[in-house]
Amino acid sequence: MAHLIDLTTFTDKRGNLTVIEQGIPFDIKRIFYIYGVDDSVRGGHRHHQTIQAAICIQGSCIIKNNNNIEQEDFLLDNPSKCLILKPEDWHEMYAFSPNAILMVLASTKFDKVDYIFQPYE
Image 1 (tube, rainbow, N blue to C red):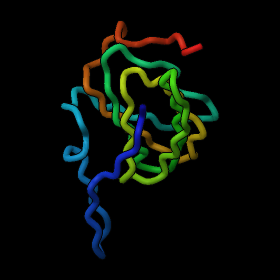
Image 2 (image 1 turned 45 degrees about the horizontal axis):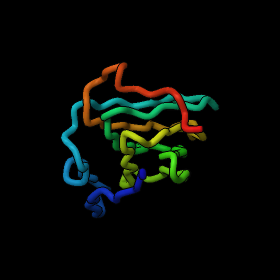
Image 3 (image 1 turned 90 degrees about the horizontal axis):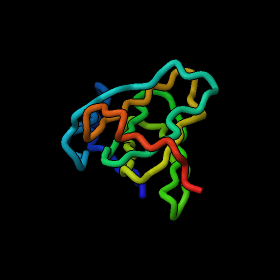
Image 4 (image 1 turned 180 degrees about the vertical axis):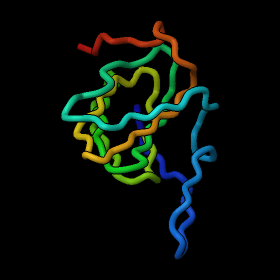
């Protein structure tokens, strides 16, 4: 099941520095980000192999997750929060704030055959 992790963040009077590579439980093969989203729902899929780490580096959004056993909504509203999505996690991203930037790290390079667009019943 998808779960949140806290990324290591160093804070002092100059600001915050969050370290990503120490907390991600896989080798990163792809990085992309989603921004400028209207009231649309993004995602709507799961994977055969790909593990993902989602970080809302600006603003906020909600990721709805269903692994065919349990369902949960995760609010990403802090760049030190990271949602780990396993391949079986059907996910949809929605309720993007106007300034939201959602960065996603993936364990595989893009391969259209890795995507499963059929939701769980």
